[in-house]
Length: 103
Ligand SMILES: [Cu+2]
Image (cartoon, rainbow, N blue to C red; front, side, top):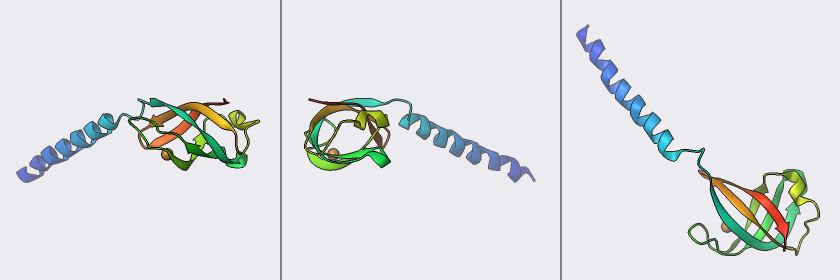
């Protein structure tokens, strides 16, 4: 029965490692990048828009891709062909535009 007691050690260690990894990713720490691009399409019903965006140094090369916006209201008045800028908030593997404006 003594072996049962020793089973707790690896279980405890694994738990500590798992918790450590999660803290390492720290999803509460968001990074912000300047975003500039041209609107390819707006999907207001899904709170997304597709942008042909410029280089974001240290994060992403220029490309065409879909983005979510944090506030649905920021899509008001934005249409295909507009040049826009904003902040891209990156949290872990998720990103969302927090501040979108025409320029
Ligand atoms: Cu991209």
